[in-house]
Image 1 (tube, one colour):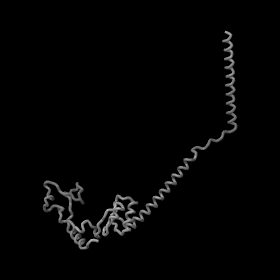
Image 2 (spheres, helix red, strand yellow):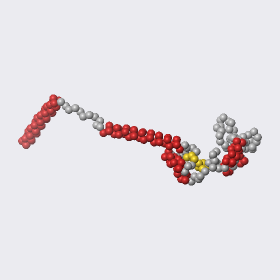
Image 3 (cartoon, one colour):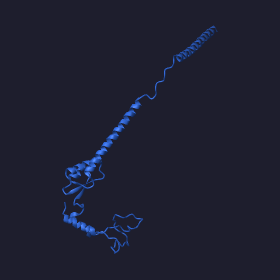
Image 4 (spheres, helix red, strand yellow):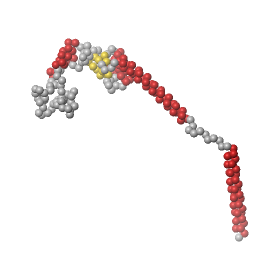
Length: 208
């Protein structure tokens, strides 16, 4: 903790400090409210520090050097992006977990900070642990449902797409068989006639 006297002095100084505004911040077409930018105009009255214009940022408005950058409780915040940042945090400082950190690494940082009894500014360790447990259980449930759907889909693919055709009746088989026999008989008669004709042609050619 920092000297409470310096914190009280900084609080009193901030109560008298004006709200620094950008030039022409009251213009509805320009959305400049809430940030500061140095006026650069050649005829800028604000740059010349004339009365009736917004206040210009100057060194005299700064906080005491001992408490500059500290929180209202007197802690110096340190942004933690990994476990190495936690190891470098000294006593009398607090931790801000970076917004770019994922859930798993965030849980590791919170666990390490809680083990060293360091204050966490932007995270409540108890609520975060509860939410992560609920999220993990929900993910497991969704994963099991997805695996079950894939299993059912694979079993349906293995089954034959069409059922086998029913067997033909005996009468139909007999009709088909007799039809093929008639065709074979006709073909055999034609082959015999062709062979006889070929022999006759041979004999005639020899006689000549």
